[in-house]
Image (cartoon, rainbow, N blue to C red; front, side, top):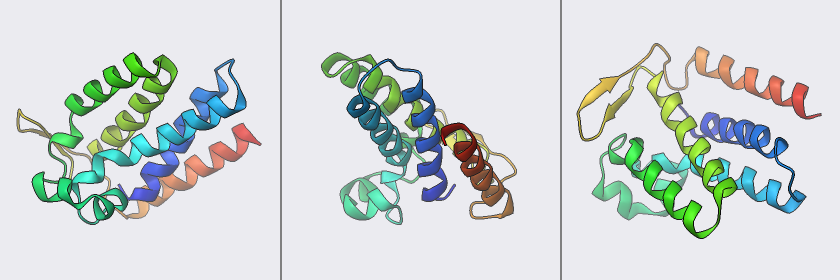
Length: 147
């Protein structure tokens, strides 16, 4: 999926999660930001992605849709964030990161589950019509639920 689709999905799941919490507006805002960031993080291994262009060393050292598109960084970062900052922020990170992986699973390019090499892919072409329909649907749902 394109970066904007991942970011909007991160925004959407972040808003849903934040809306369930009985916490301050600042905490809710941070939770949404963390979810958006985490939804973009797996593509840090691509030199064409927003994060990959800024932190080039990861893209040089790792194959795109490799280790960063696996459960290992998701669990590792979740555990660290949970230990040092708390569950709500860790859960926000995990939902954003997982949303990225799930969206990439339904693309024609799919994901190779590192280190197994198992590949899963779906029918959606990156930047294709179905992706734009999905993105538009998310935007409409956000408008309906959060206005």
